[in-house]
Every structure is written in structure tokens, then in C-alpha cells.
Amino acid sequence: MEKRATAISIQTSGVYIGSALSSFSILSIKSIGWRATFNGMGYLGIALGILILLFVKEPPRAKVVDK
Image (cartoon, rainbow, N blue to C red):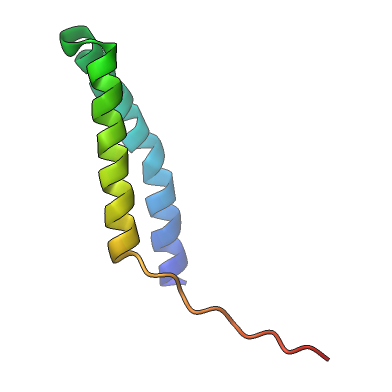
């Protein structure tokens, strides 16, 4: 049950992280322009994706027995 609560809290925190990134991107657009902000957010997303691939492991799947 503890793992489920942790997973739900991580998913729910995405709303607040998304709001914060939205506010940051608006400020960034005003200061450096939309193209640089677009590229920066893209690089940030790629870096985050690589980190997730490296550190988050897929749980083992159950074997299905055919009858």
C-alpha cells in the first residue's frame, strides 16, 4: 500500500511542477525569446528522459501460462 501512495503522490505533484515550469517558461520567453525557451525546454526534456531511462527500472512482468 505504501508504494501505491508514493506513486499517486508523484503523479499528483506533476500538476504543481507543470504549473511552475509554465510560469518559468513565460518569464523565460519575455527575457530571451520564444525560440531559445523552446530549445531550452526541449534540452531539459531530453536530459530528464535520459535520466529516467538510466535510473528507473521496469518491474519484472508476471509470466502468463497458456492452457
